[in-house]
Image (cartoon, rainbow, N blue to C red):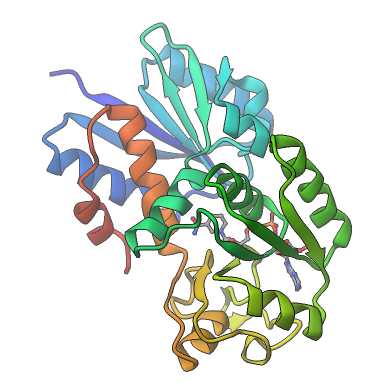
Length: 283
Ligand code: NDP
């Protein structure tokens, strides 16, 4: 029969795990669907999205550097994706109308749930205020966290994010911004149940990890759950420091898997074969 198509739009797209993950899931579910990656230049993003609609594509993923810009070329944007200001998943309806979602945020929460972690009512220490941190932070407030501390190099970026989060909350949320200051970090870590790294710290580029401004071994506390968005290397400085004091944790492959699961379910309307998708990733 007729193959239903889904595209990944990004630049670059060559190293993405998404085609393997989604195609394995389509095959396991017995669906005649296919997922392909397309490199798109920034000035042709609108053409690319309209082209997918014209060709009858059922959906798309959007990745770096187009997650923000794509908002301007969609017909409809999910409320949370609009608040985050980033879309990573598009669903095309039968008329070719494009609706944008942010499954990074859903995926982060589902990844924690898969490890038995519920954020509702908890105190959270969030490192970073960039794109990943925004997706995580809006998901956290929707899940009803009790308290949120944001640590960021640029204080302005963190305070801007905090103001947006506050505006999105009906009740005033207990939030603070701190600097990479040892005493402030230690105090926030001692109060928190979960620490989340949404900075690029610890990420390996050409075999070298970007070092932390302050060694995590000096401020992490036993009992914290450590969630790192970074997945290369699989065990980051933060996860290693946590493991050394008995903390449980997960790397960014959890979020990567579950953003894919959430996107796959939006496109197909079926529950995703999570195990198959996980096996297609380099866990
Ligand atoms: P952004 O560029 O949007 O944000 C980068 C963040 O890292 C900012 O908070 C920035 O602080 C901070 N940062 C960078 N370098 C330093 C440094 N030397 N010292 C202190 N802080 C620093 O990136 P993203 O949010 O898109 O990505 C961040 C990480 O999360 C990446 O490793 C990415 O791969 C990962 N990620 C993983 C996902 C997954 O599915 N697992 C999804 C999304 C992201 P400042 O504001 O001061 O510049």
